[in-house]
Length: 331
Ligand code: NAD
Ligand code: DAU
Image (cartoon, rainbow, N blue to C red):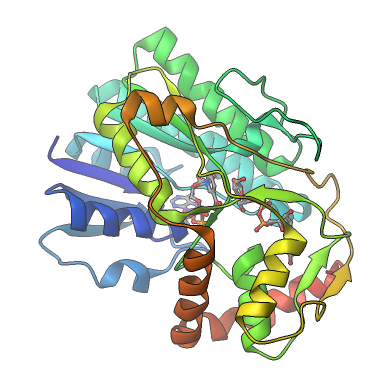
């Protein structure tokens, strides 16, 4: 394997993945990204030009996709519409990118016999009760709740069908909630960090009791690389780092880290259909591929706060518009 096509490489996880490839491998990388509101040219501009090329294009554009897939030995597919709240207001782009975009890519990968890795989410499994001792495994039945997660579930099923029907050389991974540098400030952790840096109060949906299983983006990406290099074709690997916390716990930790009283937050309108809890059992990934996470949540979160403090130039221009959108839903 010499050349990897990374779709969505100008987004949060994709840009960190490209960084991971530049540092930890000798692979040549091409980023294919449409630069939607969630894509940032500056996130990929800093890479050495002899290692990383950038192609501005849409994964639903069959011509561009065919040309780029033909040039690559492997595709790692991150590109997606990724935000649940947006999917509740305007589902159509989620169908276009997550379903048709994935279909366009796997058809090209099939034509060219290209190795394909599909990046997906634990949300395809629905949610768990707060007191349920169970966690998601590769055997958990699909039961997505939102327009976002149902389009990701659809894309997973397309990839699995292409493996079985056409012999596509694909693997899949389903990861829990990521945090770290370059995450859009519409998402929970960067929204609260930038609120606090701005002197505003954090905003918790409902009662703040919902639980997410947090993983640092670099740990997600080291797992994706392990699956790309050593995963078995046709297999799914769940990625998680035992990071379960309620949203209220995360906000209280941010308030403490940033020197504010622990109860200095607002409870706001809940998300419709809000999944209660996600939790990942990553035994297969750990035992079969020998993967372990490197970050602990406390130091990873503190480093993330510092990153947003140092990168105000990047998030400041979109802060007002992001908050104005939330205000319309009472959030
Ligand atoms: P993101 O929204 O930050 O980035 C998405 C990227 O895809 C952007 O650069 C955007 O410009 C690009 N894109 C969108 N539509 C496109 C199109 N039609 N053609 C080409 N490029 C397009 O998303 P993220 O949080 O980095 O998530 C990346 C992937 O990881 C997604 O597939 C998501 O489902 C999955 N995932 C995310 C998380 C998480 O916590 N963020 C967890 C598990 C899995
Ligand atoms: O589980 C993986 C998924 O994690 C990924 O597939 C998605 O792409 C990613 O966006 C994320 O989805 P969530 O919906 O869990 O993430 P979000 O950051 O939107 O919200 C995290 C939790 O925080 C959720 O319970 C909703 C809540 N929340 C969110 C925001 C933006 C708040 O309480 N307040 C907020 O302001």
